[in-house]
Length: 210
Image 1 (cartoon, helix red, strand yellow):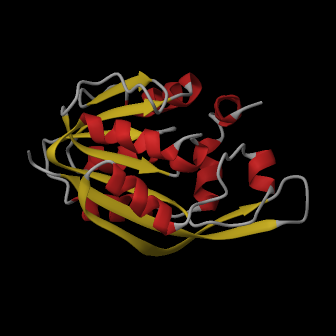
Image 2: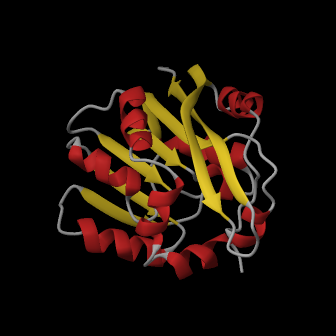
């Protein structure tokens, strides 16, 4: 099984599972860091069942929710599909089905550690941002909890913040910030007595005006 298969399988349980991993304050902080504005367009990359999407809709943004898992998107559509302010698209990290410089914000929560090539994914997120648009990423610091690789199919065991800065700089983004979110992602192993408590960082950057 790979990451996509895992999320297909847990899509009906994900909202309950996610509540044990981290709090709602993450999405609130992401929106505050981005200084989102009502009526703007935001992309939720790795949207899952709509954790970040819900906050964006609450703040009256138009949302494009993108995920590789059709089952996750189905669950998201069941919750928010009646809203005319949301579009759901199934796609991978490297070929986002959106025009260049077409959106105001890109959000990626707990997405990057499921991607084989984070630097390439960040380049693609940057491509769709308008000049002056903002990218906000929340993800895990580097850790050694191997069971997350085997049980949840994480590709990366978190990241060094230096590498995150480097990928953002390589995408020619400006005003780069990588800060501690003052929160941990907590998860118990299903197959052992192990449990994880991992610090979460929040990174933000802006696409420079040409």
